[in-house]
Image (cartoon, rainbow over all chains, first blue to last red; front, top):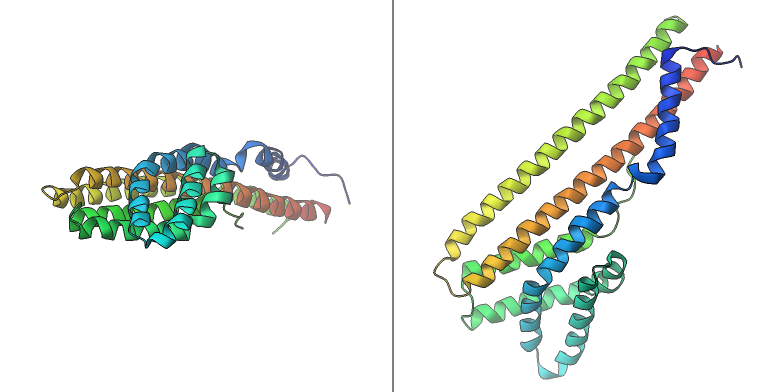
Length: 146
Length: 106
């Protein structure tokens, strides 16, 4: 193979490719992780107080025999979320999401049944459950796409 | 197409690749911001229905949380798109570089 002549196109292609390879692992390909840590995690921590009210109402609505396990799950979930540690939120919070979501929905129904909140307000609370679920799922880093 | 024309075409391909990715990314960010703004407006409209109901304070808090979560999720999607496009540009640039090397080696 002959040596590469100094054509602008070849130089540009090689320079760009090598630059991308060098920069990408350092900063360029970690924007998603940064957005998760600096936007999504704080948003989940912020929403924990209001959301916990729904979950605790759901625990209270359970038969007495089921409350201890539900309380343990809720405690573990909110401790993980309030830690602000994304890895812990995924490892200890996301795995309990299905249980916590069901408790929250049951709690909203209970609040509405006893007149603590109206139908439109209940819809607002259910919408938050949906948004928290989407956010929890987004905590996991997306795989590279080509 | 002679070698010089091939190399010129490769250069044009690289520029087109970068411009296309930058345009798409910029448009995506604009679209995401508009989506969040529309979502916030829709939730504000819904909140107007809650006025006068019991538990308005809880609904207000829930709507605030929902909008913040949606905005944060949108930021994550945009950031993931940036990462994916950088990787795409890197991979494509490598392929173009390989093509360029083959052209000059002929």
